[in-house]
Length: 128
Image (cartoon, rainbow, N blue to C red; front, top):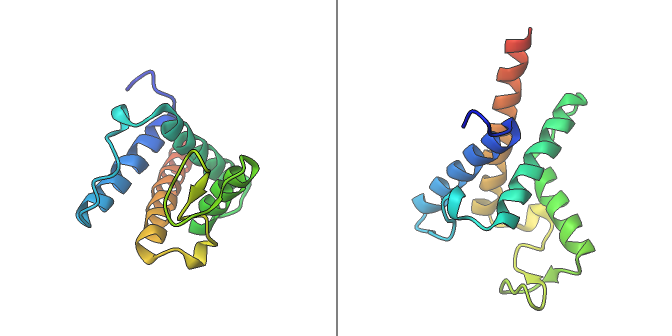
């Protein structure tokens, strides 16, 4: 992992934690990082980059921030709400305001924000 960019290292940790969280509830939908599609890994890395940039700017992103950014991107790509995820018709059951998502999905965002924030704080303390 010596040659892996820091943002990817953090994204891998976030992915593994969220995968473990999902598995704890009996959901085995997330593959390990190395088996995840490239688009999924890219989205997670980009999410880490966005959160780190926000933290560096002195702002603290909340767990809904990541979801809203995801929805903005999907909306630009023509996605909308649908009861079942379908890449062909661009429908997704999570295309809802953050507050309307089920608690178990919102927890994934809390985990993500907590991990990125923890890395940021640790790195900042090493720099001081």
